[in-house]
Structures are given as structure tokens and as C-alpha cells.
Length: 143
Length: 143
DNA sequence: GAATATTAGTTGATTTTGTAACTAACAACC
DNA sequence: GGTTGTTAGTTACAAAATCAACTAATATTC
Image (tube, rainbow over all chains, first blue to last red; front, side, top):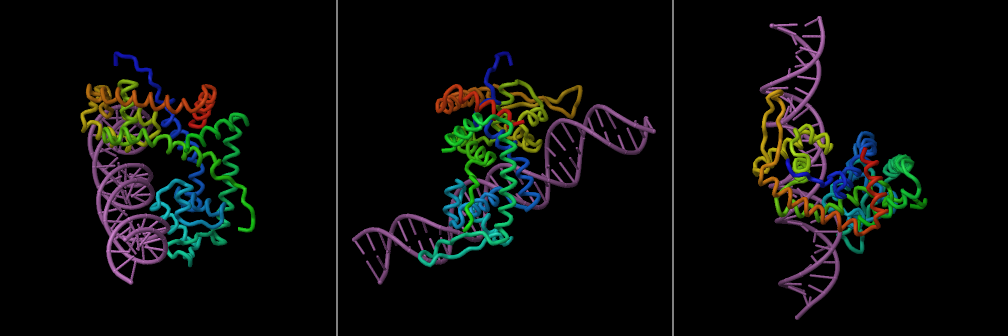
């Protein structure tokens, strides 16, 4: 390489964001994976239902920006573990209402506390102002 | 759900980072995928070699924090397209030096300019100060 | 210097994801 | 009220990522 190349890959935002996302998810992944044998989309579905109560697969997919096949499989897996139950809607029998079982709710509660601790530990690495800027920009970039 | 749940998934950093990373990579992915038929690890390897000149598969894996099988397959694919060439090292014949061909370099140059434009467009969505804070924090979180 | 351990890189089997085609239910149109 | 179009969700197949086992070369140890 005779020509000097001043492009800094480490600072290229899509790359940097991916690296940060991957690194920052690592330890949390271990928790839901090792402790509950869940996949990424599965804990996301679990959290959506834990937080919002009852949702349809489509609604979860829209909120989480995930494809319906991913959601479908995650729902099937969570149902198999008895973490959620489905109820077909009378007014439109294509749709099913999803909600957590008691078991699913207790798993969610545990994971949510882990998530709270985890997020707190990350926030402790920065000032409150920095955390605000970070959140604001990430939300903006997510749109 | 009788109990109110105040956990905000959208603000949970690992989740938010993933959403931002995914959204911000989307359009760039289209470029290297549709225009050059490359995969994520492939453009990363291409960029590493374009920037640093000559590297071994192991070195790329360390810098990009990717597993050696991913790198191995990406290198094979890039070699197949004549974007890079390998040279076994005399001093240690397990290792091979990787470097871009002329063709690989011209593809890299094009993609690098796309990346520059892309990053600029993202930076235009924030103030220079915000961009600095964002970069600093993402680098910190990547460790 | 022969036996054992490490290391760089590849290959194959399994798991997970992505894409596209499908079914079933509903809606709109004529 | 039958044809056409749309929507929610599933299934089947292809592409890709992960993990374990492997080969070949070098290092280490006795």
C-alpha cells in the first residue's frame, strides 16, 4: 500500500454501532440463553408481552421491527415452554391474542430485573448527560 | 396485566443499540449486497485489507472481533471473485498474508466513498458535539 | 529428537435466519 | 353472492451463522 488510506473503519457509524451493540449484548445474551435457553427474538417477544400485556403477533413484529416469521417461531417456542398462551379473537379469527402465563410472567420478571441491573451498569460508565445524548441519538438513528 | 410495568424496552441499551445498528446499516447493506453480491463479513474483510494493506486472517478476526470460520469463508469468497490474493509466509507456513488485487482495490475504493458519504449523511443528523459524544461512548461500549 | 501441545486455517454438521409460497379468514367490488 | 384482493400467521426451502472436529505446521517439553 503506497497510498495512505485515512478511512477509519472503527469510526464508521454502522460498523461502530454494530460492534457496540454486539459487545454490549454479550453478557445479557448469556443470561437469557444459558439460564432459560431462549433466543434473541424469544426474549424480545417475552418482554413485549410482559410490558404491554396482550398483543398480537403482528403488533409485536411492528414494535420490534422483526419479520413475522421470526415472531411466529418465537411465539411457538415460548408456547412450547408454556410461557405464553394464545387466544383466537372472535371478531377476526385470523388474529390471536398473545399473553404470558403465570410461568412466563415470573420468567419475565426475573429477566426484567437482570435487564435493569444490566442497563444501570452500562449507564454507570457515563455521565447522566452523556447517557441522555446517547439515548436521544440512538432513538433518532433507529427511525 | 393489573400491575403497571414501567420498564421501557425501547430505552434498554442493548436493545436500543441493536435497533439503531440494524436501522443504520440497512441502506449500506443494500449497496455492498446488491451491487457487489457481498456479505457482511466480506465487506469487512475487504475494508480491513483496503485500509491496512496486508493482514493475516487471524489479525482480521481479532480486529473485527469475528470468528475465524467467518473470516475463512469470507476470504475464500473474496478470493473466488479475484478481490484478494493469498501468499503463504516462508517463516511460518501455517500463516498466509492476504492483500487486495487491483480489482479488489478498485471495489474497495468505490465502497469506501459510499461509506464516507453514508457516514456524512448520518452525521448531518446531529451536531458535531453530539457526534463526538456518540463516537466516544460507542467506542467505550465496544470494549 | 520423539512425544505432546498450540496455533492458523479449513471443513462438516447443526442451528438459526431469511425468502417465498402457502392456508385460512376476512373485505371489497361488481 | 361470487370473484378478486388483502391480511394474519404458518410452513418449506435456501442462505448463513455457529460450533466441533479436523489438517498441517510450529513450539515445547522431557
